[in-house]
Amino acid sequence: MPRQSNLIRFILIFPNLPTSGKFILKDLPGSGKRIDILCRCLDACFKWGPNILNNNTLEIVAILSNELSLTFTSHKDMPLGEVGWAKEISNVLQEGSCPFISKTYENLDTLVKRIRRISDIWVMDEEGVSFKGILNRISHSQNSFMLGNNRGFDSYAYEVIKKYQIPSMSLGDTSYLGSHCIALVIAQLERLIT
Image 1 (cartoon, rainbow, N blue to C red):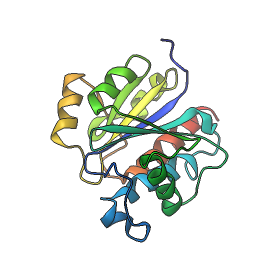
Image 2 (image 1 turned 60 degrees about the horizontal axis):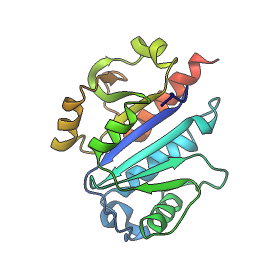
Image 3 (image 1 turned 45 degrees about the vertical axis):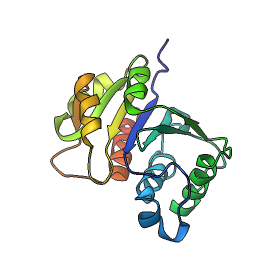
Image 4 (image 1 turned 135 degrees about the vertical axis):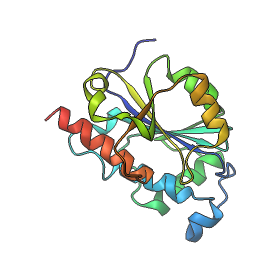
């Protein structure tokens, strides 16, 4: 399968997020088991991240409870803010449809196996190689950046990372929120094309 050049994908792993879509919009961190983090990452990617990059080159895949994935792509009617995103996610999880969210029943292992055929995959980790040191390589291929939730990666994610020998990449010594990692990666890649 040919690689779609310059696609930037973020793989977000949420081992405890409910797949029922039933959470209270006024209590996203509690009732949604921190679905607010996913919503903030979506805003970072599609709303406050890109200035130069075309949104069509950005994608987020979220693995929920290691049983299904939601793929988010750009669309003119995307919501703004955590509650807007949560409403759309809830709708799709409860068998509704949305033009910019697709649902697939696949776990992390299946996703990585599929994506590594078309994309380089990097694990975002403070201990990894410097992001700036690999910018030239990244700019010439499709890339996927894997991030954990607010607690990092669970043991299953580490097993998959080890199984496929996915290299680590670092934005520096500072530990950033997932949304900030996404915004920083997009900003660095935009600097390459200016």
